[in-house]
Length: 85
Image (cartoon, rainbow, N blue to C red; front, side, top):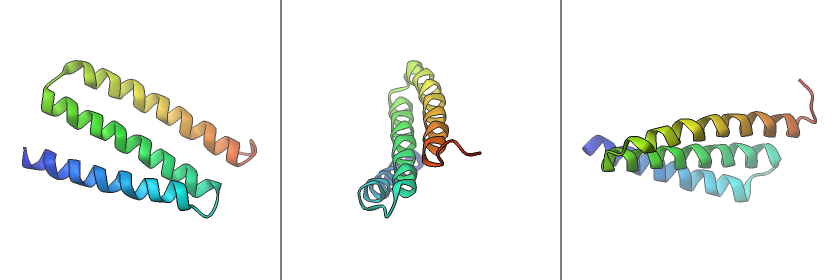
């Protein structure tokens, strides 16, 4: 249980750093990285909530959210590079 609380602390720190990067980023790429980090930090927090509540439904939600987050990251990267590969 101590490990989960330490993970919770680190995820909250990562979310705070991502929020700072999203608002103070020097360009759009840094803001995109911050938003990706924020999204996956929230997914991690949802996973820890599922661990504390022992709810199996939460883990299905995490799988769907990570796939959606991955696709959003790829599409945002394509938009930032103007469709170049």
